[in-house]
Image (cartoon, rainbow, N blue to C red; front, side):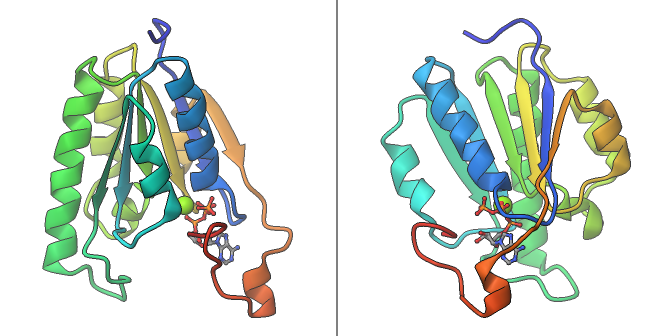
Length: 173
Ligand code: ATP
Ligand code: MG
């Protein structure tokens, strides 16, 4: 179903809307009969999209994270989870099973020294050319921006969090 040339997309920045943009693309691609793999790293708390995506054919969601917010050192469980997830991603990038592979919050892996940029670049270079990749994260390496085909920076103008309004059901999770 996908075009021959799968591209690399990056949604990054301090503003809200990176994961929701990736979810919007998931919705659109699924409606075109495409198969989507959404891999969320360093997370496992419930968010509304988990329930909604179950209703969509052709969309698989996997989450890798201990669920605990990482403070300082990464726990052995978070490390284990990360490597399980990365293994799945490598396979998905090489095969043609999915038309779109979304790597939500992958860039934290660089920050926590679980993955080097070279390893990531190699995986992206060796990916099946038909697979479209979407990477989201607040901060991404400059090198990723250089090799990506589509880059959107989401700028923070206002966020209710800064007024002391905590994350809201249905909007932030
Ligand atoms: P969303 O999932 O809502 O699209 P995001 O992917 O752009 O947000 P993340 O960095 O993944 O943003 O943020 C995780 C959580 O923090 C989400 O609940 C998100 O809504 C919220 N958030 C996003 N931007 C900000 C901000 N500038 N200040 C505080 N919270 C934020
Ligand atoms: Mg996000």
